[in-house]
Image (cartoon, rainbow, N blue to C red; front, side):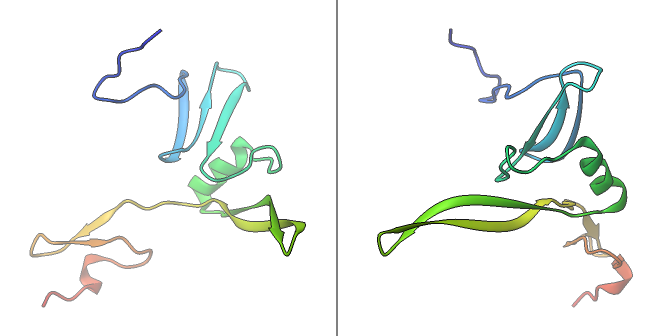
Length: 119
């Protein structure tokens, strides 16, 4: 059937509890036990076993989890497996620092508004 979308948005997944790092990077619990669904953008979930504890460690301690994705490539009529290592779970900062003149600067770890100079 055709489901109406509110403001052009559709429900991708739903559950009673959710931990989100960023859009398309979240863990959602289908019920209050261990049954959960982890969604990470550009990470192969079949080969990389990501757990709830790794996501919680990223939030609490800033730990970065590396993941390896494999794809097939062809060069000179020969197929080969290419393994690409990338950061699977990282902290994402969407914070801004407001300066004296009400302009905004991006948040950088360890810097405060006093560290910026206004020209």
